[in-house]
Image 1 (tube, rainbow, N blue to C red):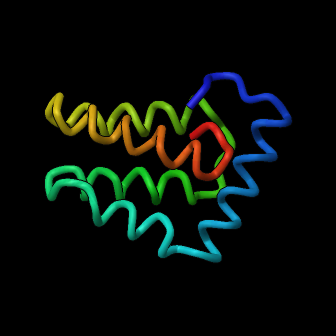
Image 2 (image 1 turned 90 degrees about the horizontal axis):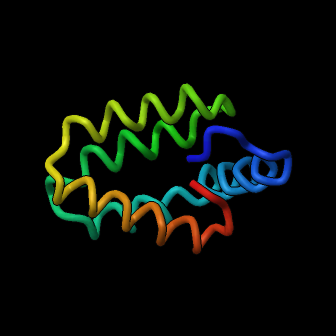
Length: 93
């Protein structure tokens, strides 16, 4: 997630959050396709994204903490998943 969020980015993130809260299967089904090792961290990232925070620095720090406990292969898998979901939702996650 970018350190400085523009008003447009914040609006897209809010819309993506609303959509995912109303349609949790979209993200849950996507997470279920990840490796077993990546599913736990991905669920933590999901919970972080679905929180009401728009403080990019705090969200980045929390995401960094989650990734710090992962192997390089899992970090890559999480990054690939983030990119796919960003495209699907039209929001930079």
